[in-house]
Amino acid sequence: MDQEQECCSHEETGRKSHHSDKVKSSLTNRLNRIEGQIRGIKGLIEKDTYCDDVLNQIASVQSALNGVGKLLLEHHMKSCVVERIKEGDTEVINELMTTVNKLMK
Image (cartoon, rainbow, N blue to C red; front, top):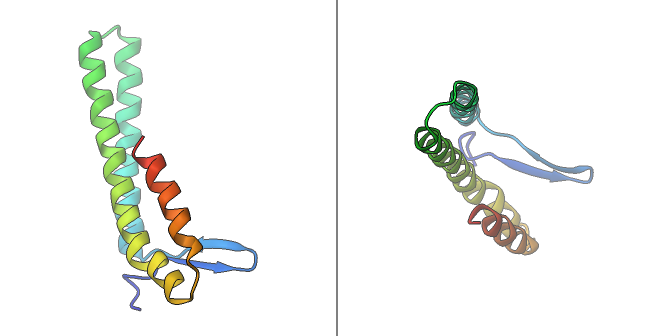
């Protein structure tokens, strides 16, 4: 498996992620933008901005967070989940379904 596909390992002490620098950079950049959007929403509320405008900004943040979740989920499925299934660990399917259900709420 190449560095782009490498994601998670699960050792005796617990699971860890090993994302490539490209994936880390992409996730970090997206989260930094979302963090800025959140600060912006806080400022809008402090300035008594019209509720509909604030709600639209909240929808934008939720969409951006969903994008981060989708990117991470895709990477996780293509690497961590595949590797664990190859190792015979089918419990990963239950774990994945629980996570997907949480993401879809």
